[in-house]
Amino acid sequence: MTASIISKVWNYCNTLRDDGVSYGDYLEQLTYFLFLKMADEYSRAPYNRNTGIPEKYNWSSLVGKSGAQLEAHYVELLKELGNEKGMLGQIFLKAQNKIQDPAKLHKLIQMINDETWVMLGTDVKGDIYEGLLEKNAEDTKSGAGQYFTPRALIRAMVEVIRPETHKTMADPACGTGGFFLAYHDFISTHYKESLDKDEKEFLKYKTFRGWEIVANTARLCLMNLFLHNIGDLNSEPPITRNDSLIADPGDRFDYVLTNPPFGKKSSITITNEDGTQGKESLTYNRQDFWATTSNKQLNFVQHVRTMLKIDGKAAIVVPDNVLFEGGAGETVRKRLLQSCDVHTLLRLPTGLFYAQGVKANVLFFDNKPASKDPWTKEVWIYDLRTNMHFTLKTKQLKYEDLQDFIKCYNPENRFKRAETERFKKYTYDQIIARDKTNMDIFWLKDESLGDLDNLPEPDVLAVEIVENIESALLSFKEVVNGLNGDEEIN
Image 1 (cartoon, rainbow, N blue to C red):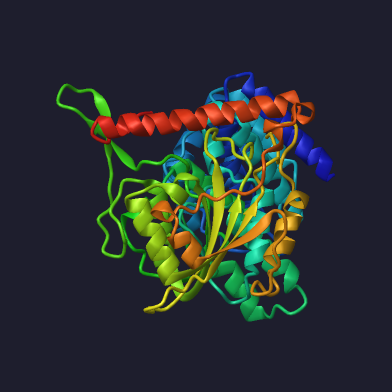
Image 2: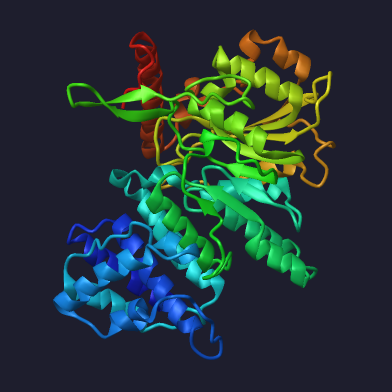
């Protein structure tokens, strides 16, 4: 049954692509229909819930129509539901019909109507939707890949953080909600036998808080959470649609896990006097930041630290420039090492992300109270990059590939660790003594430089060459940006 539903969803997606409907547009329409259909199911026995959806714009109002009448009603429905409160209004905010053929719109509605979605397990509903999200990320033209973090990496990050029940977790750049789902799954699995009623309610309604600046991505995130039993039809949505860097949110969280969007500079689009559009660097003058900079990645590092409770824990994906850049970068690294326990750095391989040209890492740190002495004593670095080769199509990163890192991290007691070939520790004094407090550290020999008989497969090699070229181009753009008054180049 599950395979049959997934097959139908996929096949119809491919049919619509022939009409020029992208995965993203298809996924968006599917979000509206799934939400309305499940709300309709919840309004009937044995649930009998008051869903808050006006009868004029509920699921039944769609099912009985076809042709031009269906199209006109659907457009009206989207507009009216976008004015509602709570999760309902957030999912339909500024919604538009992207399927212009009324016959195909009717067929999609019938396909959704033929199934009882509430009866499907959370895993099944989630798998269908997550699969579509990943497919959408692969559609490079849409740019959706920048909102999709490899699920294996997210799972490993949550695994080593080891979240506990009745704690709060935030993601200031939540994309489609991958970190929330992995966190929820960890708590549900590891505390399955011991979760009491209060803990289950806290997990469902009070644990998560996210920010997402792109409206359509926030919509997909809300639906993803709903399908995975986080929040419900009438609860206030845990996602805020704005630029999280604008201000200190005020609230403090036990955990912050995030993969901020790639791209170094923060900028806004402006209209020049001659009517042309351009980019202007955007800096955030915040009292809680150690350095004022237009470097978006450095701003996110500072922002994450602000969001943490005094004993809060963070895991953030950052590009290499955060580890070595001078000026504001050096200031942020020194202050972070001083005020937090920056205990682990995971150097990621290339070929993991849909946005090419960025070499990334995961920085793990714990917040601490004010102290004269630096909290960081030693930083343990795991090198998953040197001599490791992955691609998005032929050799994707799997959870198993991160098992050695999890073992070395030793989440049961990270204060008892042992060095290995890929896992080395550097003391605070060693790092501070490096030029500009540079944390861009490698020690393994790149075998491909000296052993021509053991080169990676051609497709892997080609991807790595592209990654390196893209990375070099980004660096050159930054140089040009500096020469041109720090304006961003796309």
